Image 1 (cartoon, rainbow, N blue to C red):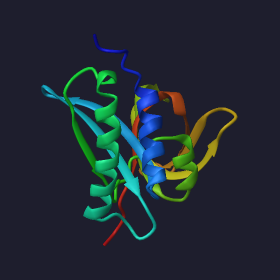
Image 2 (tube, rainbow, N blue to C red):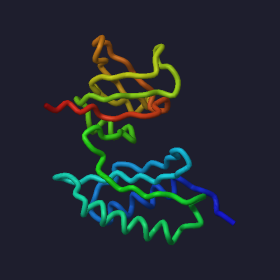
Image 3 (cartoon, rainbow, N blue to C red):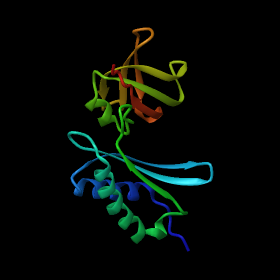
Image 4 (cartoon, rainbow, N blue to C red):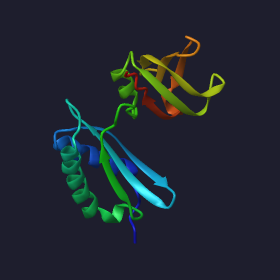
Length: 159
């Protein structure tokens, strides 16, 4: 019999493993695509991530997942990689870390009449649990409740 799938416990354990290996755990995503289930682990370090870094973390996380196989409800694919130039923002602390950078935000329900936003991160209000963006197309500012954010990532502004 399969144990209960406790995403948060598995996510926390994976992040602990990543950090014990000397990397930042940017985030862990559990995703179902077509008929496949993926566990995606995003890691980072000063100077960037190499294939060797991904291999080190992948082996450590695989050992943990193999030892806790009964916790995963089905077969899965493990992917370990860099968050990339359009880095996902997984927490309100991520927004705080990247104040001054541009981000795309998609909400579950409309905020001020819309679900999608793009603009500069102006700040974070941890008391209200919201982020503040200066919208790119209108220069208006909007406060978006963290709880309503479905997906968010930085916008690459390179050459």
